[in-house]
Length: 199
Image (cartoon, rainbow, N blue to C red; front, side):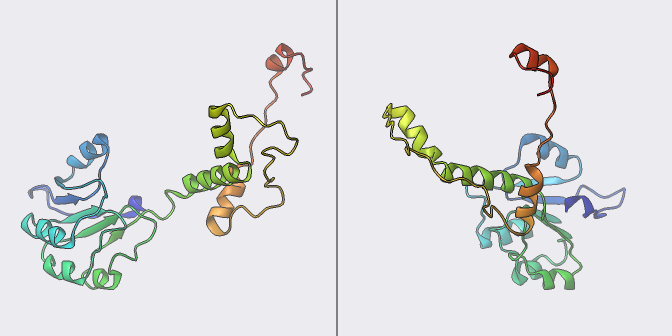
């Protein structure tokens, strides 16, 4: 969790530490980081960076911290290459198997990662995909676009998610908790549509 990664990079008289960013970030985040770091910004559409280029940028700019994604390998070679100035790593990913954790521990380099940040979004997407497949939503969209109606009684019935397992582990728990909705009675709306306030 980035909130727990608090590194004192410099004294009050030192220049800003060097941060290498290898991912595309919104401008407001860059502006926020610029108040704390001198930023070296290198990214491409794939969010990946060749290992040789990563070594070159980190060494030439005396990088103190790197912000990257799961596809970027942080290995022993890089850590040895930058041992005199690299102080922290942050990966925008749930896992950290692309980082040589043992080598970082030897060098007292802390690692920031985002274990729970995408969990709710993944749960939302899981339910969306389940509904899209079980209720044949893609086929429905195509039929509406093509105006190709079929009035067969079993046409696009699909399958109910009732009594189905829609997720396991952490994602399953979030799905279960996310879709317990609070229903509120709206008396004004009920009267407008001709229902009693007992609805």
